Image (cartoon, rainbow, N blue to C red; front, side, top):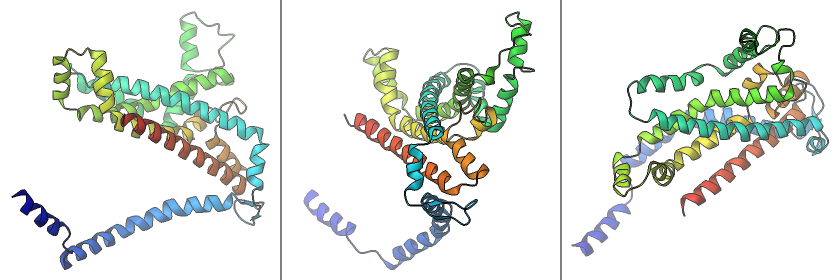
Length: 312
């Protein structure tokens, strides 16, 4: 029976498609056409336009530019402000993404446990992500204002701060940088928790029961069962958070606006400065191209490292 069924199956799979199937395929492509055109208009065109502007110079706000060759890219090599923004962007991404992944995963594991009021805990976890980023940043900026901020006021009432010598939180490069890290982690670990929690909900309970029967401890179950099964979710989450952190703008802009000085200026703010304030589309586009290349490099490294680990 097997030898007879296999050829019949092969003939059925290799049979030509009928007119109805071809019409359905054409209809599907026709329905997808508006989406494809929108993606080309909103995605491909801006990318090509930015790449083209990176080889232009002069003019104002993209008008009257002339060909510059590689002059803008050579200019980057001697731009200390660009290197400072690049260092801050990379350090910001490293610290905040690690913090978000660790805190978010821990929150997801906690919210996945069965206890009374679990729905309330899940709602509370999502609260920071529900508030718009710019609103979060402005609230934090007021909280840490050295003259009328909530934090200094609380410290004064507790007798831990002399009113004559308030802590200038946003006037210190070290303190401002630390607060940006904390704000970014607090803001985005909710999204990480939501994505990881969705992955946890998809793991069958039978897998955990089998591990317990084998005598595995909670730590062994987490390390040998939960985290390996969460690898695809963690990979996607890691990529999303890395892209957002490298291209962060509104959080830093509304909180410190790159200050004090240029201590907290990242590449996103530097691009905005060049294009919107100086009208230098050529140099701003060059920085944007470099930022895109760095982002793609991180994605490739993540994919290769984590997928290679998953195949062992």
